[in-house]
Amino acid sequence: MKDYVFSINGKFVDEGDAKVSVLDHGFLFGDSIYEVVRTVNGKLFAADRHLKRLHKSAQALDMPLQRDDDWFIKHWRAMHKRRGGGESYLRIIVTRGVGPLSLDYSKCDKQNVIGIAKPLNVWPDEDYAHGCKVVLAHVRRNPKQATDPAIKSGNYLNNVLALKEAREHQGAEAVMLNVEGHVTEATTSNIFMVKDGVVKTPARKEGLLEGVTRGFIIEVCRQLGIRCEETIFTGDDLLNADEVFITGTTRDVMPVGHIGRHKIKRTPGSITIRIANAYHEVLHDPKNHQ
Ligand code: PDD
Image (cartoon, rainbow, N blue to C red; front, side, top):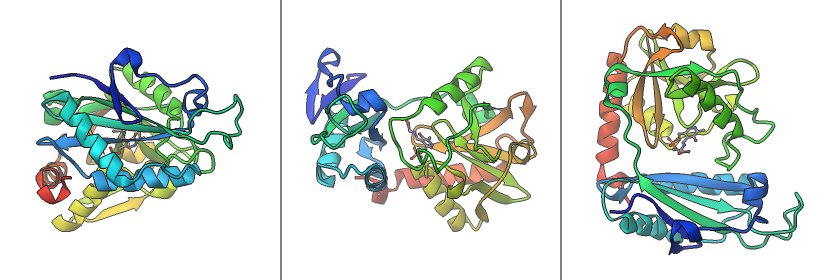
């Protein structure tokens, strides 16, 4: 079984040969988009939703995809097969391509597609049993009016710096506020809080990536008859929550036990547990597998 697998434009290569030109605008300017699909029992989970978001990112950056959906599905499957076992984390990056050393991309006519597969992250059991620690980062999420965080682009520098703050305090994740001081999301996961039986997650307009997992959790709440609001809340609201959890492709539903030194009231809380169990069913439902 291989740990890492690499491909360039559909061709599998060794790490040393997994190269793009230094004139690729993805490298030069972060002018690229990406998606991460995971496997469940060796099948692609929710690849249709990830593809939909890839198209949305592509459209927002004026770089319509040069390969069709079938190509991406087949390549994600091939990447997993090539790893040869276990569950996979399958990242596909689409770059603007090679062009002159200029912000003007009109001469970049051939996108590069890079595949990187690795084993699906396994987070400490302790984080699921007693909740992980997150910090409230000083670095802010970029506003929608700049590079919209709804675009899953290669520009993750704010998130990189926010995660550094988390690591400095032994945190697993960093929660990022927007410039108005409202909670948006964490560096590679979305965030939810529970207060008085109501589940809340930041509204899209606050500036965040609409996670595929986030979308499933909103649907799961509806099915369970739990009220779920896409709304506005602050860091203080989060500290006063009854329960807090983060969601994402690699973490599923992970309860939060501490925000900095502050302990969250219930970890994991009963509503978080119900949602996590229901999401487990969604993950294993063959109708979500491709
Ligand atoms: N990150 N917010 C951000 C900024 C993210 O990068 C991610 C995912 C999420 C959660 O989205 P989803 O539920 O679709 O995974 C939220 C991926 C996993 C990554 O960069 O590895």
